[in-house]
Amino acid sequence: MASQDPLSMTEPHFETWTRVRDRLRKEYGEATFNSWLKNIELEGVSNGHVIMTLPTKFLRDWVINNYANRIRQIWIGENGSVQSIDIHVKEASAAPAAGNAPDTADSTASNVQPISAAESFDANEKISAQLDPRFTFENFVVGKSNELAHAAARRVAEATDGVPFNPLYLYGGVGLGKTHLMHAIGHAIRANSPEKKVLYLSAEKFMYRFIRALRYKDTMNFKDQFRSVDVLMIDDVQFIAGKESTQEEFFHTFNALVDQNHQIIISGDRSPTDLEGMEERMRSRLGWGLVADIHPTDYELRLGILQSKVEQANIDIEPRILEFLAHRITSNVRELEGALNRVLAYSDLVGRAVTLESTQEVLRDLLRANDRRITIEEIQKRVAEHFNIRMSDMHSARRARAVARPRQVAMYLAKQLTSRSLPEIGRKFGGRDHTTVMHAVRKIDELREQDVSLSEDIDLLRRMLEG
Image (cartoon, rainbow, N blue to C red; front, side):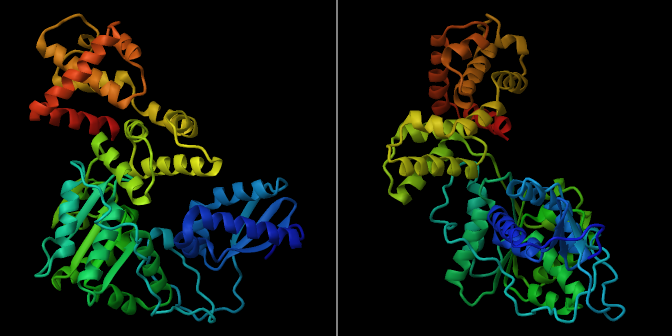
């Protein structure tokens, strides 16, 4: 490796690099680490500049675009004298034969460097990701926000006489249960029909495998692997948006499996029609079967999830603490479960019972973040727009039902979705007394039991505010 200054390769440098690698592995997980970061080699350190190498330009470019800043931060954290990092393509020991590089690939994979003769493409390497044993239908909590997706997933998993819909496309925001349902489908199919070949992987890994096949001129084996499965599950399909060559191969794989009446299950963070950077024909294919969205969770579902978690762990915790968490952590299920785990870990480590006070203290940062997401002003604006009244009516003294009812709905949502006290909420509604807010909350609770239309309106408003 050419450098203006001599490279130093002392034992402390290797020890620091080992710690940096370990932190990268923990932060990004085994799959990502093995795919993109494992092959980074330390070349040396020169005057505060860390020199590292990767075997190909594609890997080098990918790591620089996606991980370089974090690698630099970790290096500086381990060694304050480090100023920057440089990542280069490792010089090949011998010039490869002409024509080894593919003619075409994704824009992110262009100009892929040839590989040394010592490397080989393991055609028999297992390409399916492991299914998480925690993610089954038995521990998936069903509510209004996910009941369609859950029912569709069960129908696909239990189908014995053909494919019910192809593909099944699940979409929703982060941490709402898409991956859980896909793993549950995989577990159920493998249990009910062990003879079926089930392949589950992320769209990122699909692209990575495709590019490897191009590099090693083994695309026929790649096609055979993916088109011979009975069930193909691709997670986070939005990852291949803008990747033309990968989309092309996925398109043909999709068609081949559909022609054979083999099941395809796909997840994404938005509906097929909203996938930017995806070819029109691909968006059309993704919407062929059943498209099932997963909405943000409501309070009842969040509480049910927490109750299920503590029951599985056989932990005794006050119901009011679970209710508090369900009210305050509204972003997604992953963050909700993480909050519960933090509270329980704190209790276990310090040897104290879980109390509401300790919960608030341990989750102080998370609660502040959630508080910032929804304000009373936002609630008032959204409710006023939904019920077609003026924003000023939220603060006025008008008592006509067409105004008073939406105002009560806004007070109810303010109590449910913010941490503001009743007097604070009252002041935001034209200086009303806290007893007025209490009456509004009770009234809306009663009406939700009697008026299905109003209950649906409130659920919709809540999803829009939490989304």
